[in-house]
Length: 201
Image 1 (tube, rainbow, N blue to C red):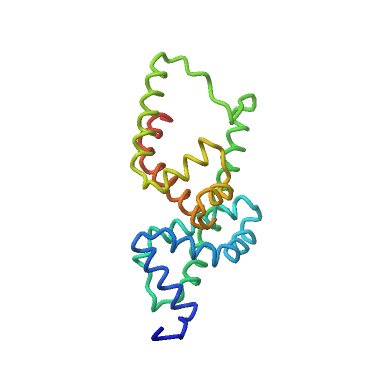
Image 2 (tube, rainbow, N blue to C red):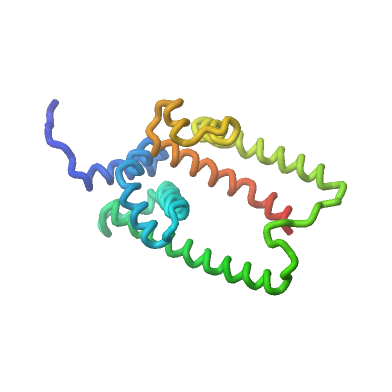
């Protein structure tokens, strides 16, 4: 081996981020394994909820995946950038939950006998046709995912496997599976948003 020196953590992080910018999911998984615990602790301090903290961390890594090419190394380290994203996401979530609670309280006050969680039965005979059309859109969106993302999502939703079980079955790091599922779900939401937004109108 010509050079036995090892890169510093900062250089290694940046090398991984360069791979993320090239679309290499395993690099994202490596960064997740390295920093998710400390970022979770930060998110939990802000949100106060375990599920919310987990959601924030996954959102932070999803944003890193999208914006990796925009990272400016002269402005700081990769972990500093991730910390800023996580803090911003956590604060956004806390504010959004506050707004949702206020809206729910207002709706309950306006219609105290209505259940805010339940909708009316749809008696429109065209509903079955609309549902079948949405089903086709879902199948099309799934077909446009990368094979690795589609496999992870199908194992999670069709076979009911946890992400830890998926990682074990596929012999992949848990961080890689988590980011793969998250990115795949984000692509599905982006692809299906127009159809399901119309259904809610």
